[in-house]
Length: 264
Image 1 (cartoon, helix red, strand yellow):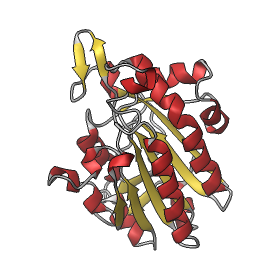
Image 2 (cartoon, one colour; image 1 turned 60 degrees about the vertical axis):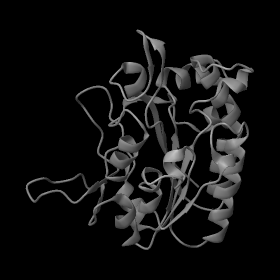
Image 3 (tube, one colour; image 1 turned 180 degrees about the horizontal axis):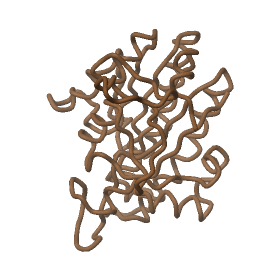
């Protein structure tokens, strides 16, 4: 298991990547088909874990993540949590869980000298609307541009370039670097030259993002030890049982890929 408490006590930085809207079955099939060869080199043995998200669309899922509630395994036995807000006295967290004395993870990490930086993707991180300011407002620093958003076909490269520039700027300081990858969020039909979004076009979007995400991870971990968390916030339905979109408790939406690793 990963001892997040020890990692944070040591001042190792954290990369937290959410692949927005990425279905578990799409991520698994892309891996099995060899369409994400760079991530395949980096993922733990066994590849993506199937987990269940605490939120069926971007806002509640990320609020849960930053409050200590990451996606859970779809069976009763759960590994220790990576982090959680200090619980009531009757509950004893696992010694490897980072327990923060704050209302959310970002404030809790700040008490340990961490700088939290958001590289936004979808418009929930854009500050273009009042609701689009809720999540970025939680960070010490946030970055968003239209070219980071999913209609831009090279969005992940732009996001990774900014993330690496941020990491360079804070060299020597513990950093929580959060990246919300928008390429896997609709619209992604353009990766297949189509006007509609499907499982196939989401897989093509993930295949596009593969080399850029691997570049981000390998570049960061060449400089020191990082805790890396990669997961989707939710999935998307593309006509499954007649459903489309997200915000519904359908398996296509609730089952998400998840991976954690320590490198460097």
